[in-house]
Amino acid sequence: MSKATMRVRLVLSDGGVFHNEEVEIPSASAAAYERLIDCLREDPEVLKRIHVDVERLAAAYVVTKAS
Image (tube, rainbow, N blue to C red):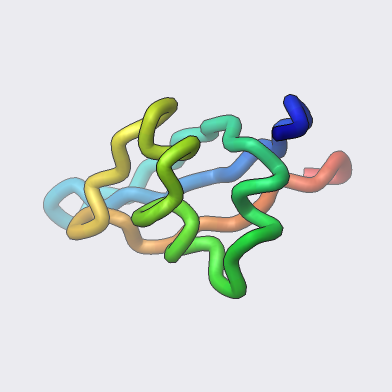
């Protein structure tokens, strides 16, 4: 598996207050899924790196160089 990674910004809800967290996931993992949320919830390589509380997850998107 390639070691290339991509940055993903997670927007999490904490009792009505939102905050951002940025994480890095393998690019190959994201490419294997049609939806980013499925990758974050299911991919074994991603799950080894991070834990995502999907009940608090309001949004997730790839951080581009311009962001």
